[in-house]
Image (cartoon, rainbow, N blue to C red; front, side, top):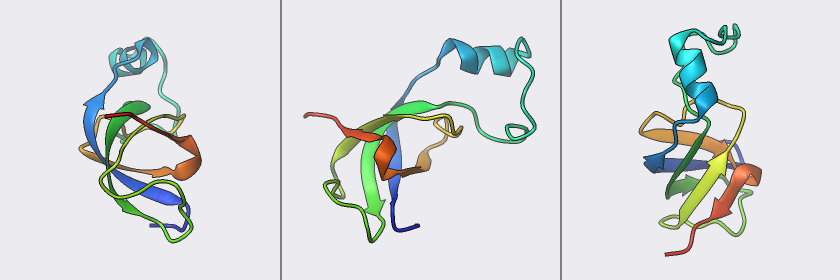
Length: 88
C-alpha cells in the first residue's frame, strides 16, 4: 500500500446508473476503463492501512465513492481522502 491508501474488504457495493450504462454499452467505455472491474462506490471493512493513514483503523467500517473503478471486486485499495466512517 502507498502511505495514504487503505485496503478495504467490500461487504456492500452499489450499482449506479452510470455503471449499468457502461456495462450495457449505452455509454462508451473510456480507454482507461477497458478491462477493469466496474463500480465506483461501496462499503466495507478496513483490512490494512498505509503508513500515513490517520483516523482509520483496521477492522473499522468505511464507505467511499470515487471516480476510480473496482468497487465490484471483493477488495479495493482506496486513498484515505475518499473514505468516510460508517457507524455500527
